[in-house]
Length: 323
Length: 146
Image (cartoon, rainbow over all chains, first blue to last red; front, top):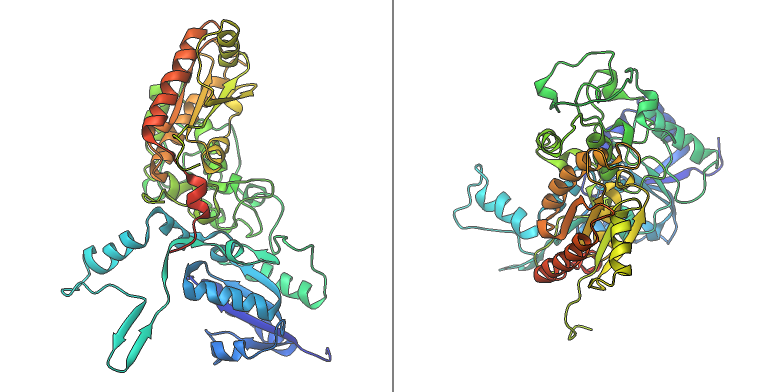
């Protein structure tokens, strides 16, 4: 056993908690993690406070696995804090790497999100029209809550990131391989994507590809797919060709299309644009009208092609009316 | 800078064999064309990835034109323009979702023999984008959170 244990921290910003489940999914290996590492900070599992981290000397933590996107000023504050206190900062999971589901809120802004969530949604019961304020004066004094940003950002858009572990969530065997690499001191150059492959999901997929000629696009509830034929060939939009492999093609293994959670493969600038291009160029249409009719079946292009990557895409968000 | 009048920046991806030839002929014939249109020559409109269009908008273009050979038969590579007319309607839908006005993106066909048509398009499209005002995507991306 090493003389000094690895100092590990885990944090969650705007995320669902799935990345934390991945750590638990390491199962008995979590006990090995406990043997070789001291977990200094992990809000979901360990009772530590922000002030404990603030009290640490700079670069005290060896590795910080940071999951979640930057949605609020609190998320951003913690991103800066964890960077300051950690030798290696890892963007852990799709939210931290490319925005993931929280990033789809970039189709809206703070005002429209607050209006819907607190005032207009069918389940809202808010007769006094109370909407969160960053500061609120009470009899006991002033209360402050974090600010909700207009735009969701990725970790790398607010801080310097050393490594990226993609996936929603990252698959436990891949996480374990990264932990082993950290312990062995065998890490690739800064900025690398680790715990994933260099090829696309198609490379790991069991389905057989033939010539694509799509007359109709199907959403997954509209079709029972063949278990052997390429899902894309069947008219189901599968993000496989525009997504980095490493998951073992888990979704297509059970005949569900890849949704793109491992992010863009190497050398692809914009995952959604690559997938859009792949999907539309195989439309089987010989006239413009026919092509338009077929592609109009895709009712939500951003939600389909940028399901995980909107916050890290070239345009980053829908247009704000006032700039 | 802010006091000067707005001059739109238009990026035009033109195929080497048809619309670029038309634009070249329009220039040789000294047809009137605005200086706002920056032409990028590509070998075929079928090789224009949607990413090019998004990148143009994200880096400050106020309008984008894609133009190539008339389908079905004009394409130098037989069916490159088929790929274009299959892709571009979906790009239109995507841009609409991003909140980019319809009038900022034009795609179509101009053959090598249609120089006046190119000159007219470059003028009318520039005026159309001028009417829509600056897109300012760069400013939006750089703006600090309020």
